[in-house]
Image (cartoon, rainbow over all chains, first blue to last red; front, side, top):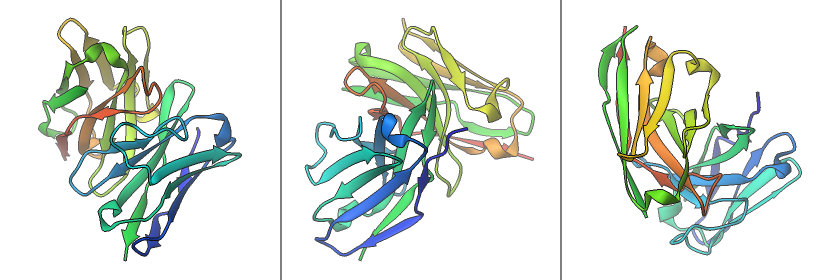
Amino acid sequence: SYDLIQSPSVSVSPGQTASITCSGDRLGTKYVSWYRQRPGQSPLLVIFQDTKRPSGIPERFSGSNSGNTATLTISGTQSIDEADYYCQAWDGTTVIFGGGTRLTVL
Amino acid sequence: EVKLVESGGGLVQRGGSLRLSCAASGITSDIYWMSWVRQAPGKGLEWVANIKQDGSEKHYVDSVEGRFTISRDNAKNLLFLQLDSLRAEDTAVYYCAATTVVSPLGFEYWGQGTLVTVSS
């Protein structure tokens, strides 16, 4: 089975840049999506097809994917960005989620 | 814009059954794949099953294969998940989620979730 590996937690100071990574075998050959989930809320798509932002997602959210690692970058991090972030990819016709990264803004 | 609303969750005994529903409204013609994704208490997201827009393909995570069945009624814009032979480890919030023609591989729309609790 295919696995996506994320660090459990990342901390960042307000206004700084947060980088959240997702690793998988030859992940760069797959399209990666990213989701933000705040406590008690449903997940929200913030990046799809590695680099694209859905309507309404701020420009400070960006993504990249190459080799074995995909990265979600949040520039000018704000307190409202504090949440769990999940990467996701397809392995054939099945869907894989990473284990999630808790972003703390302090 | 698509809105998804789940229903059907509840408390059920181990070995029992439940049927979850997800009602889609809005521009449903934009929907490509629909999935059920679950989240156990305090845990991460786990994909459970998906079905293509026309129902021609269905796929399941290994842990539910043979116990859960995904289906859809496009005429009524409904998605279903039949849960049989339930186990304690199936306890979770179950979300329906949809990819679209704009984002065919990312889940652009999510419901609010419905809680399934399996008691032993």
